[in-house]
Image (cartoon, rainbow, N blue to C red; front, side):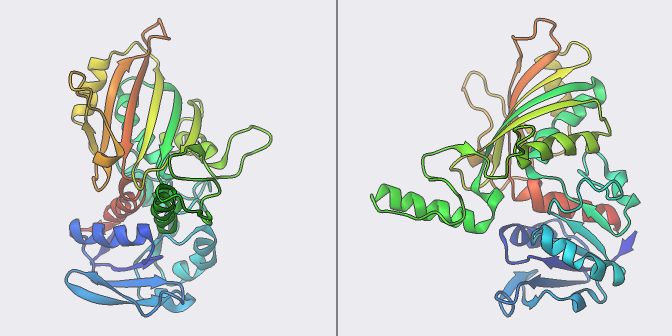
Length: 338
């Protein structure tokens, strides 16, 4: 356990880095000193933390001297490049990329599910994929009561998952579309405004699944500690700025009712039930944006399963917060003494 840590954020000027700074401040994380690190082009900028301006420094091997916890949100290649420097400095890396998630020696942690795994780290802890976090955080409390055997997920993923540049491009492209002006997409490969398309990650020619879908499959098994759980996903990008939504259908070992699911989730950490049937009001990205909790609703019996073992529901969660920055900061909280 670490007391009063010196904290570094690599990728501090990116969309997730900005939210990490805000989470550290709002959650009163015990920071002795905060170092903000980014590429050479961002070095020299200042960012606010607890009422003070902090200078952004260029990320180098020497950046981690004296650092206790290093949050990384600068891409997998950067995380791999600087892991040795972080470890040599005696710091712990909490990494938001996919670089180490499936390494058997690296804990993959959602604090509401497997916080104890974080304490078994060997210098690096992985933050799961945003779609995985938003899907399985509400499923875990159910799984503990009535084992979830199978998950079918369909995601509706926001521009924030591709970074601040993609969010800006969506805004610019939408203005151009409405004004009847041409627009060249540079970040997202397909026309984005008023369009949906398969998630823009590489497709595995053998399985037909893209990388985002396979992340959900593999990461769920690792986090749940259940290699027998069956998971399938279809991941889609939608023209929403931030907050992912997901349609989930899951099958349990024993029969389960919507009422039982609502009762379990009503006291589950990090979950808020939004399930107004009479008002036809359910989780939406506009409501999830800026919220720490994952919104859960449309909880109903899956009528395609006559055994009564299956439930369908809809969730929405802020990709930049619980899907990324907040989850990372919560991992950090496991490591520090209060």
